[in-house]
Amino acid sequence: MSEPSPQSIRAEALEALLIEKGFLKAEDVDQVILRYGERVGPLNGAQVIARAWVDDQFREDLLNDASAAIAVYQFEGGQVEKLVVVENTATVHNVVVCTLCSCYPWALLGLPPKWYKDPEYRSRVVKEPRKVISEMGFDVAAGKSVKVWDSSAEIRYLVLPQPPENLQSYNENDLTGLVSRDGMIGVAER
Ligand code: FE
Image (cartoon, rainbow, N blue to C red; front, side, top):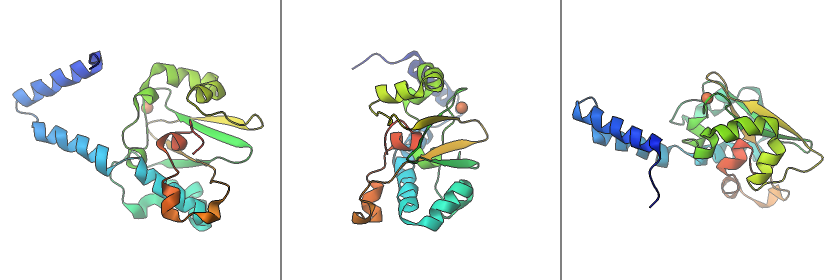
């Protein structure tokens, strides 16, 4: 097993202290982890993307006012009160970062991955997005421009990846399986 990080040691010490003082119950902490790990997560986002690929009206609504468009789903998790969806096209690839901290649309993607919170990703993706995305395993086509979107406490971004070429041969459920968390952040094709 690897060494726990200073952050996780601090978090555990804080949790132990809060439980000892009676401010918190261990079951409450487990509940939160369960909630974000199992009931909230990238599957919510994938569902939204797949629907946007097959339903033009929904796609249009999503691009106009994403928070309103996803309201019907009643996803748990929050952080999508001002959601903006940005669409990848034949000429533009989008990628999302929070340069200040780790703002992220929890209700659609669950908890942010560790690399999203790392100072390295946050500073480098702004300066050399194409290179950072390539290092993460995806080469953006040379003819496309790369747009970087900086999330904030007010606005959260989600990338609408390009659909697969043979879109018609999939049903909506299969399409959901093609969408990854990284694709919706913009560091993967979809
Ligand atoms: Fe942030």
